Structures are given as C-alpha cells and as structure tokens.
Image (cartoon, rainbow, N blue to C red; front, side):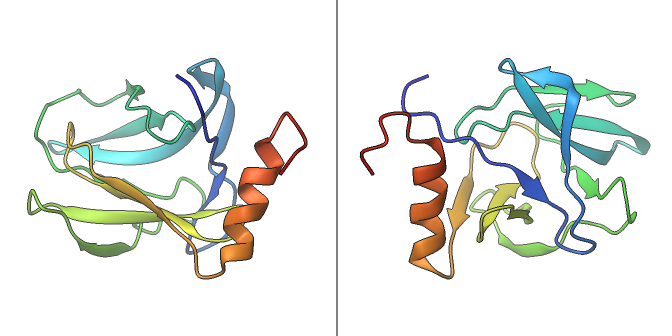
Length: 136
C-alpha cells in the first residue's frame, strides 16, 4: 500500500484507546473492538491503515454481509451510529487520537468508510505526524 495513513482511535464514549499491540494486522497494532455477530460475542481486530480491509475475527464467525454490533471493550457501550450507509447498514464511529473521527459501515464486507475533521488543523497534524520526509 502506498501513501498509508495510520489511524489511532479511542472510544467515543469513554475515551480509552482501542489500539491493541498484541494482535498485529498489516504488521501494525490493530484496532480491537468487541463485536456481536450472528448472536455470538467475540472480538474483531481491524487494520489501523485507512483503506485496508484486513481484519481478524476471534470468537465470532466472518459472515459476509452480516451487520455487526460493535461494543467498546472498556466501557461496554455500543459504538455510536452516525448515519446509514448506502447499503442500508448503520455507520459506526471511532474518535481519532488526533482530532476528528473515523466512520465505517457495520456490514461485514462493505467498503464504505470515511475520516471527518471538525478542524482542518487536526487533519494537517495527522498528516504531519506520519510524514517521513519532514517537508509538510
């Protein structure tokens, strides 16, 4: 992947980090979230690289097209739903550690996701934090 943007995220309810250094996805710490899929509860680990759809399931099945209920592993609150995707599934949100939020569709296999910032300076800070050339 070129031009990788790594996103570190927190729970919108309790503010705790959802980054998991023990489970690596795309050779980086994953985003670990409790999930309810088909009546079973387990974990889903997502890639922290924006645009990567790599993930790992633990205790739940990888059922294509299923709508997943995501829950913070710390405070046990469901992730907030921001809107409805074009596929008619709820879109959940996570807070970025550097301002803004990541929105993603809860339908397993849907590729809809977005990053939103209330302050353009936060977007610049995120880019600068990952600029290896130091020219930004």
